[in-house]
Length: 59
Length: 223
Length: 244
Image (cartoon, rainbow over all chains, first blue to last red):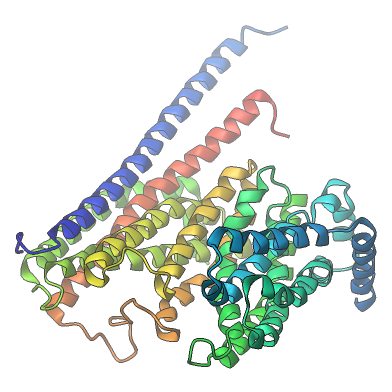
């Protein structure tokens, strides 16, 4: 590839924005997946806690 | 089924006439756009003449869209929509009836009046008739699609922006072919006949899609 | 039908996804590497456009993928409404942000290509307008999911939007042939075969495949998240006693 060609800035910008957007997209999808996993674990732990303590709350 | 259609039409029509319905909003908005455009663009009469068909179409399109926004709102709020859904009349027929009334009371009168108001934009007099024909045809599609947007957003609080976002993609082909059909021989190549045929095809497609899609959307809100 | 039922079980899907995911990523990376290598080093520069033609290798696959993903969304929506497959509307919802990103990239890279080639950043011709409309459809679809709280109701309304909006996909494809356009007419997906030289066509097709596998990789993760999010919502509602 001839880097001194005219309009090279447009080519570089195109590839840059492509990787930036795709990278941001992948990051967001993985971040959401991490959040979901963490929250589910949280809810599971709370559920286990409730089951342990509910036995002592008998009227 | 024909009598049920007629009864909904008669009911909505008389409501519209008694309360003024959506025609007030439609006319008001239309005139606002048409009057403000020359003020904003400047007195260049030739420029105005070139953009006149497109500008009139945009004004018509926006007026129909905005006035259809609350099409199902009152019926949704007071529960009559559920009664209509539970009745023996298919909801699709009800949708068609309401959209037809909206067209008869807003879309059609505007479509007829618009070319006449073209003088405000220095519209070429030879275009008044082709514009009128194209607008009368296209306005039916505009009313149908606007009612579809209203059905999809009836239960939502922030429905306004969403309606525009959803209906705009569907309006684009109507607008493109509508303007092409209106311009007659203005652009040199006379595509207006073909464009008008395509416009009719779009109207027919809208007539089929709108009742089913709207009814499905309305039913989703009622469950 | 039995294969659909086999994948209908969310737990089964999770197991399948975990097994398949690493392979999909490897294939994606491989395709991107080969495609970019061939496209940027082995393919010739255009005798008219010079090096700017290399933008094609990110612009065209993005546009193809934007259309492909919308088709996936529309088909998933139909399956959801007609067959009531439980994962269908989840699949549709998960696909939307990915498709929207591809669509945005198609428009952005197209604009960056158009400026040196035609001298203008944008023109409201047939193809560009319908691609812009496609982006609006994606945004409207995603907005529906945001606006409606109940997932079942949201999925139905969103499905209607996706299906009705699908008319735009053939319009994008055929618009360049129907009316006057600044944009290049079809040169790959034509009935009598592509008109591009293989040294340019091969990297292009490889990049197209790369984008598709990238979509698959991200889509699987997104579906998994969405299944989890539904479970979170149900659990939270049950905890507060709001679920009837």
